[in-house]
Image (cartoon, rainbow, N blue to C red; front, top):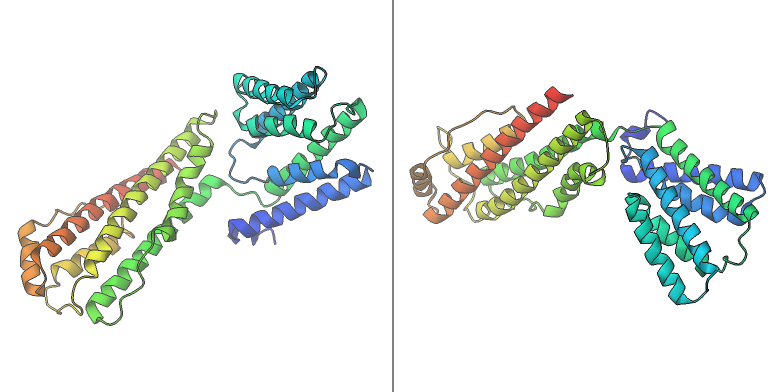
Length: 333
């Protein structure tokens, strides 16, 4: 099973991890006789299952630190008053302290701890035994989450990005191939490519860089994150250009005439499909006159073919840039 998990979708993989972390937390808390704080252990177990965090120890420290600041702030101000005004002051103070200490990942937990302490009316009931039980529950939940995430079936986020990028290229290549076949054979057009088909995967290429921005990490990892984020930006532009090109292609009358040599339009689409698979090869752009001649051969409006030619040229340049970037990524591994 440990060898099969890396091939699972992130949803199933994280679901199994949460199940394991929750089960271990429940067992330990019930065995220790602290079922009254079991809820806290479960909350921590669910929150800390995160396989995309490149610095989990630092993130845990910030979150725990933020929670402690929130709880301690609420305890101190609770001695002054229990009114909602003091609760607002406690939340404001918590935010200032957490930000000033640089514990940005613990900001939400600081607010939650401060608010929960007052909401549950535990300010007057707080004692060292309760503090110990809650701290133990939090530690158990966090440790079980880390065991489920990293000790068993660890996933290296950076190592998954090449396969993700190849999947995006494969999806676009399949759409180009479907359009080519429709233009050559006629019949019902294929389903249009939607932005939501590729955009979630493209966002994942940039997500790791955004999640870890500003955090200390090895220079090599930071460079790789930046380059994969550049790949995500390139794919956003490629997707935008294709979504402009595809409606133009659907305006052509099909099937296109079969000629030898291959018509300019079909050769351009074949070139786009090949660029998704091959290394970077710079091909000179086709002059506008060739596209005007292509319009005459196909019996299509000249402005339409000129627009198609421009979109194909833009896509070729973007895919050329993508190939160069992939070569740099391969050399950096």
